[in-house]
Image 1 (cartoon, rainbow, N blue to C red):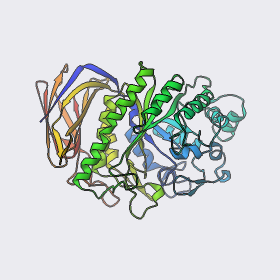
Image 2 (cartoon, one colour; image 1 turned 90 degrees about the vertical axis):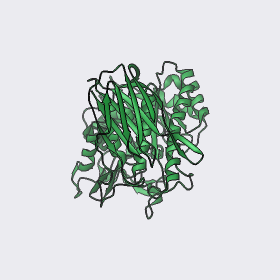
Image 3 (tube, rainbow, N blue to C red; image 1 turned 180 degrees about the vertical axis):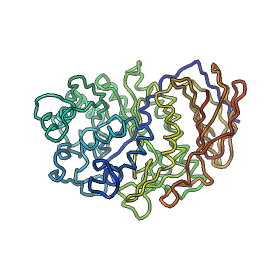
Image 4 (cartoon, rainbow, N blue to C red; image 1 turned 120 degrees about the horizontal axis):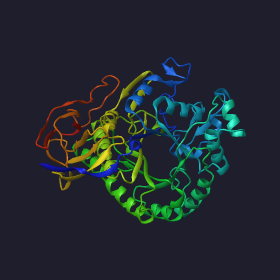
Length: 491
């Protein structure tokens, strides 16, 4: 049995809604076909942005969307993506398949997308192959309301008033595809570039520095020491990969051992946040600088027969567990973690949506986002969890992952993941400092560990009503099905 204590009178802080952010890169079919089909398309659209995707993203209450990359960001020159579309120059997407990019989806299209779905734009600037002037002019183009060449150009291109715009990333993966830099070198570049990311007339930009990958703690140390005072956020990238970079494993064909290994690697996120966070604490004990995990999720081998450079993979019940575990970890660290962005929104890696021409489906990961959105901007409650063990051979991990929050209306939500592929899990929850009288819930599970939604069967994995939670005298006993994600609402 797993025993949990939820202390309703001890707050861990606010779960920033931006923890439920997304990432859309010019990669494969994420932007073109996934989001942008053009105004002349037979697929129903709003100014070229497909309507089914718009509605699905609105329903999720997507708080923030990162764009245009990723590795693509450091070869993207924004001026090629504004003005009349037929006059925009083409470019080669050298990172992702060597395809020709026509730049039809640029700044105006992205900002309109964010307006249509109610999301904050998070733009990543080009440090790897761009210039300080180019970055400064982009900010001016977007945010300045006055008589300057950039502001006037924006007006000529159809946008009279500037946009309000908060989140700006200064480079991406500068230790790798963004320039193969040393941390000392990037720290100096960040200080230079950040100086020219200006705040114009009441628009205050939250400057995000390129942080570490995985276990590169030295990168975090150098960046915080040399440039922490100039940044508002520091990024971290970590992907759940069952195998190796060369042989990551199939998205749909895997055994119980691989299921276990995948979830064990997902739990590493807790260690990474803890250790990077402790380094940040040395230089920023007040936690002014947010940890921004702007790339996370599962990375498998591409689906057979698809372009290797497009990173298209299916999405199973296993991915739902990956999402739920990560969210519970992010909630735990909500004092430091201020935004995360799953990679990626549509048709790439751990996508929430898959499309095939005019057809669209929601993945199991989409449904976890939908179930968990009740935690957005809620107060995280302190939890202690003595979990049963989930064993596989000589290895073991906690069987249950859990988090809880209280919203402004006083409603408490508890999210639980049973990692065990084969057995139900009994969870006894002591609700301290809480006076609650009713409970209802939603569950996401399936018969097989590799069940997924496809275009012939789009509802193989969908949320259903959950009734195996019994509340009596501030004690809650929950019977979690094997391999499941459950969200409970108590009031």
